[in-house]
Length: 329
Ligand code: ATP
Image (tube, rainbow, N blue to C red; front, top):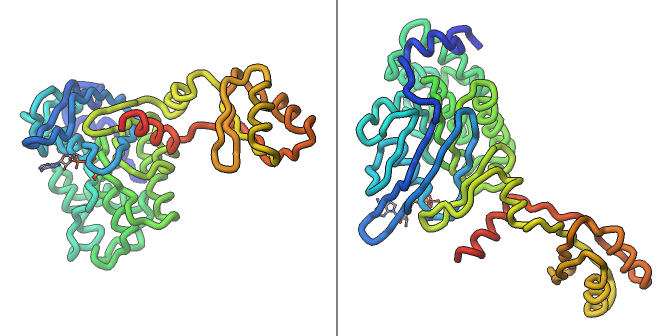
């Protein structure tokens, strides 16, 4: 990495004084398209350096939210500030500081990877040696240095996405907004891209807003998530906190025992601390006050039934997501 690509003093001088350290602050943000309320009274605050995952099914309002933050569509009601600027009235100030990677990355197919980055640098007022250094550094970071002279049309989909990230990094953004960045990538390319995003946030304190359907990926890199359903944020917070809320203070245990179902259910219910017992396919789901696995195991084994499975169940993001949709649908 070159010195000019990371020098904070130079960076600050180029961008001028910032008006705010809160990166995104939306209150009651609403967008109506005739009869459709695409985004309905959204409150969202993003802290500097965090990775926030915007989750939700098709049509939930994720892209509309991003477009309002970028000043690309006008809110019907509510208020939003991005780095202290109002995207409605100061869209250029926002665009200068925010790197936006839409679902379909806009690159010039007939230009080389390097020329695309130099062009973006130029648009952002970075020229000459400084621009060349930044472009080289960005290409190295996304592992495309050896493809620098290739035309974009010759790059694979994964390489284009990585170049899209490089293109966003060239302008040294304080916020990166990514709309479904891993769509259509193979598993190795997904890992590479997620690592790039993670490093940008952790090493440079860049805030990241990531819209995605890919729950496992979001789970791996996001500090907080917001679950969107029909234009409303139905839950938000760190994944562990959402899991705790869903568990309602109870421990959830999965158990498999090969015996008569009614008898197993009775035996499990009789264990002290057990709140309820539910059949889930071939397994039992037991909710209890505390970890009663030893007592459950004993209840099964003492009756001479084979114990096929026993484990504590964590609420992963997939489960959290599905539960919130069960509740709101
Ligand atoms: P996806 O995951 O499919 O990209 P999304 O969560 O990004 O979905 P949006 O694209 O924000 O959802 O759409 C939210 C709602 O607003 C949908 O009902 C959509 O049909 C509607 N909508 C979006 N853009 C327009 C538009 N330009 N005109 C009319 N309705 C629109």
